[in-house]
Length: 400
Ligand SMILES: [Zn+2]
Image (tube, rainbow, N blue to C red):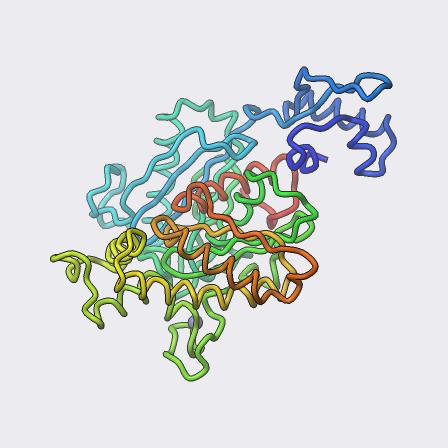
């Protein structure tokens, strides 16, 4: 019911009855309780279709807040969102405690398992306090992490892409320290939940988010619920083989997309070919060099354009496979990897889908860019907290 109100934006009780198949008195009863709980509210607007005027309902955007954190190798991004997925506050700090972060709460020499959990807890408390949120209005914390994760225990197995996360039962450690609901989930999955929720995507859309940060992943939402698979490690787009005799990947497979199209792969290729768009570019880290190449490509540098264009083409091939597998009709590109040259990637993917998607003569597949590609996973994390509290459907059970 709540998800119908969300995807509609504004909707009447009569329409809710039609969509759910419930009787009008049943709908009225549920709506009364949801209004009393502060989850939805009357908009004050009224539509008249000749009969009795119908007042419209919408989500109450200030009923509750979710806190989302995205832990990446370079930074921890923290956001608070309202129930519509709107960001009300944001903060980012360096991931490594010694990396110049303004995070003085972390004691040096802390045991590794407690280290990352202590750091996240300190950041969470300071953030909620600084933003001025009433802790009673905060419904929980979700942490987005890259790579594989054992969702049953919240454990990040080796090899972890973020130092300090490897082998840490992060969710249990956080739940021990915080008096609120805690989730830990994959960054690509959470980006998909966030984009689905905040874009008012209809439950009837076959929706996916392609997520590129350090690696490349995806999240698929069908019938309004995130596809979870056997262990919540679904849609590992970066580990689809695109070159059968290609480079070995850390995952054990050969010729994985990630080894050809991720920011690190593009940076490595550029160094190998000597394509360095600035005098000091070879001293830069992978992500910074990738952003530089992406910027050069966007403003028309032919060498950078060729290298980024090749990555976009390879990504497009893999996304075509994803679209064909799930008969998708809407795809959002999210993650820091799309922050600068997202339009080049979006165009390559859209053109390939228009020309080659299996169901293209039956329905189009629409490709869009996330509004905040860098913050998409953190926003998705906050959204998961909220939707699990007001409209369960995407997530595993919470702990804590
Ligand atoms: Zn791989």
